[in-house]
Image (cartoon, rainbow, N blue to C red):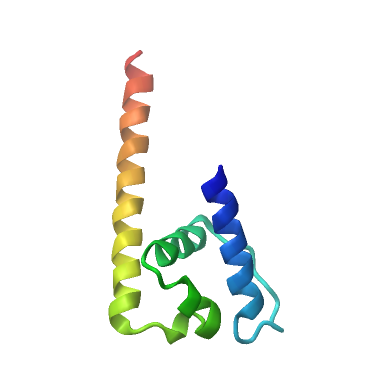
Amino acid sequence: MDNNKLTKELIEKCEKTKKGATKKQKPLTNDDIMKYEIASELGLIDKVSERGWSGLTAKEAGRIGGMLTSRKKKMKKMMEDKNKEDESV
């Protein structure tokens, strides 16, 4: 739970300092939250909070995207495995 609190604080910090913050804020999706978590793990959260997502290099953004994709695949596989277990019982 402490990790969730930390993630929420980082997201709020980034959202407040984001360029064009006067625009209407859209609700964050699960993918957005995972992006912030990955950026934090890679040590890029300060860069995101200062410059926004467009301030990342292509290599940094690609790394985040690749990790996001692999995590989504793992989650999907875990859900499928769980559903198979539930059906077999």
